Length: 329
Image (cartoon, rainbow, N blue to C red):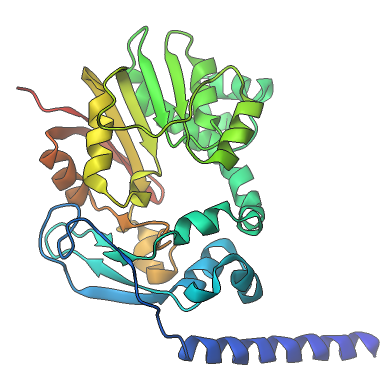
């Protein structure tokens, strides 16, 4: 009897919550955006005129769907003036880039530094970036990747793609290395290369430096004016979709790439099966944390504008990867 009573209370509370949330959704009015791209009105990948709006997504839905955050937690994490933020996602008619052209200053930074937000995504982060010890390194070093699973299998597949491009003594830099998981694996699996981990997020940097003190950590943002050190392989996984000014970013990567070096970009694929099936409920639609989602044509257009060409490409589940180098003169 008591169990039935409590069940009825739970069902009633869920119904009330859904009604409140539905009312909140209907009454959303978006605040004025105060951040625009440098070249406003054109596709940031191929410079074509803005395409049509595909969807308009309330930020609270993105926040909840992607990280599992309840609406009540959203109110604690996001500044009240941005509770009703909405994002118009555009699609380029020429290259297929999905992107936003406007945002709010400080929104992503304040959310991503919030302790409640970091606690919310901790489980996901621990799965994607597990602590690397001797057992994980031994498994990673095995020739047969069938013994691996989860993120370790993904990292092994990535390393297998990279390996043919790594000469003895090569310097490789992992841009946006998070807590340094992949960089640490590479450092241990290949003693003939020198590995550097670049991360500017202080939260991940503290964890990474504590976990892997032997890694060569770089704490400064890579600048396109920084030509003091060149790398034979530049690796940037799940970074470019977060970058607001793509031209500065690509120039920065190109600036640290040696004349005969290679660069690998990994980014969510908006044309993968799950993206096409789930639409705006797909995990890649994490706007404005993701500023854009690249098709292969969009990546080619962006890199070509900076005299870089793709020499190899492929996919891992919901992401695709591209290896490029300087155009031959």
